[in-house]
Length: 88
Image (cartoon, rainbow, N blue to C red; front, side, top):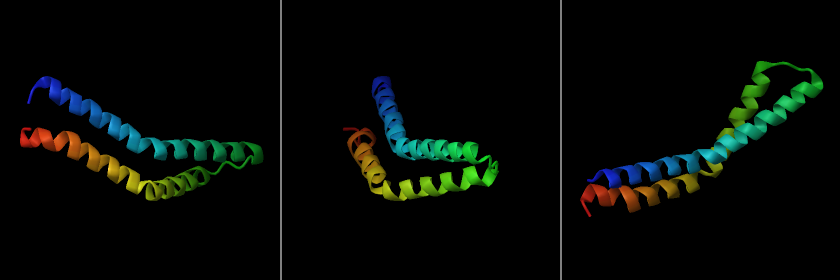
């Protein structure tokens, strides 16, 4: 395998990782901002109040977007990694 092909697959793999992580990270950001705003408005400073809603929201988004992530990985490996392994 040439260096160009290796770095091309590596670059595409990193973009797949970004596309898979983006929904979960976006929900964590939005949930954190909402909880932080609520804490600032009510003056409640509880550490678990910021952690638990974020984890729950991230798990829900992960469960909902699992088929998207699986399809993305299958198409990446089927289209880019397997032909390199087989030597096509």
